[in-house]
Image (cartoon, rainbow, N blue to C red; front, top):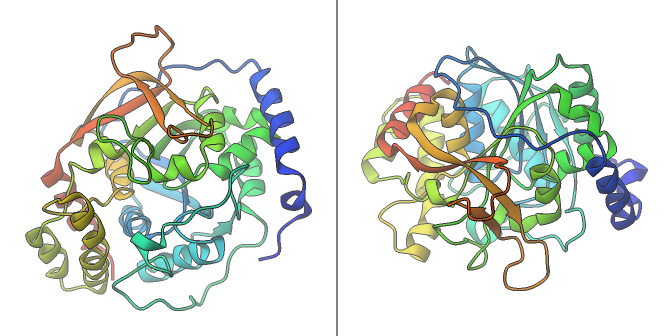
Length: 352
């Protein structure tokens, strides 16, 4: 879709000025909210870069309308370029039969760094194992950043949950332009980062943060309550032939689609890490929103290394509190793998 002129501006100057404005507001970092009860209803926006695991996460979320009141999907460049992530989000919407949910395309590149993609994991189209095609329903008019600003400004105070499944560029741009939008945010639930596990794009960095560490810095300093589901937990929630077979055995098209995607997608990580199964990273965000009791974590201080070098994109997690800095993240480190797959399978069974 056509991009407004702001995308063609000098991003470096714009972001430095905007970040300074954000930091001079009266927003102070707070500890993340305690885990929601398993009955919480979320007014939800999903920011995403589909990506195989994103598509599964989107189907998971769209199958849960009584708990997740999805206002929109906003897309960002990440696993593949923006045109493909936006198409894949629309594909997930079509597969779930949810034409009521608008899809807005957002940032086509990171704030400052050179763009990177993950076609080696997700394939050149962003999804492997299934046929990819142009969906019938188009993108919504306008761009994702403007949508976020407009929607969060109009929302009741602390009413909107934002699930973030990719690089955090869209929200960082929105915060930089309009720091006041934090008023409308209830919480952020992110898939990103790594500590105990180590990285999956460098020895220290996880892909979503590495793809735009400057955006992650802005988001972590926003003062909004944040929960992060890092590689530390996603690498403990792994597929198995039996778990995929249960999805395929549901007898609906969605179950077959998810099983076909997983059969192809998990091969890379199984071979790379020598794991018995593969992680479904982004889908853990949806499971956390639906059943937070499946997960355990700790309130910690997290900062991002945006300096060029071996630590670029690393999430520095003060697990033991040695720095005595205020906690800004509920960092999830443990999860119930079977409980996750039982919940995923139950929700996917609801779809056509």
